Image (cartoon, rainbow, N blue to C red; front, side, top):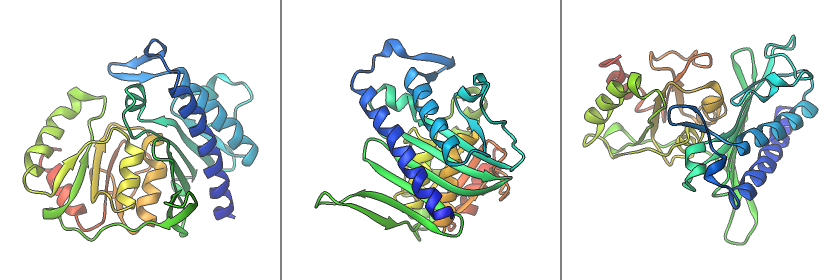
Length: 277
């Protein structure tokens, strides 16, 4: 049942990705709005969200929604955020909006289904590389992508076995710059030169998928929304990795911080975070 639903959500995410890709070809900076300082949104985010919500309602009518752009709040026919079924879709219609605006990869569609605090399935479709990452509870994590023959193939995801000295880490910069600046300065000061290297990719959903796929060994970020990390967190767990909040708790779904790794470097990163928390 979960596998079948996950594959259906993959199609919904890819359809939204096609819309985003087509709109990017004619996109104008004049279409950009500011939600907060350096936090942007456009009609593309909102258009993508409406398409996704409409499709998900048909797929699972009894579920509610948590969405980044809040388009369901202005729709009188929308489901409640906390439905009787305890099932909730968590949707980021365009994760990496700043990247999208500047034509800078990656940016993605992220969709997760929760039952209470349990993540049942997650799908992240990266638009620039046409890669669809997906996972369902206890079913493993996978990526669907094209091969050299032009065929679509599915590859099982597995985290790395690298230790901290060789780790490639993603340290993101959230919009809440004043609150997070002391933390990120400390992270870079302690990690830079002591790990394999540090990257910033501009999309929480994709950073998590890259950990799951073994392209990164770890990722840390705070002051992010549930829609940013919910689908990707399941991807990491199902690929054999570890996800906690900044305090090291496995109960991370209601918070705003994420430490996601191959499991081997988890405590190393938590220790560094703990020095400045």
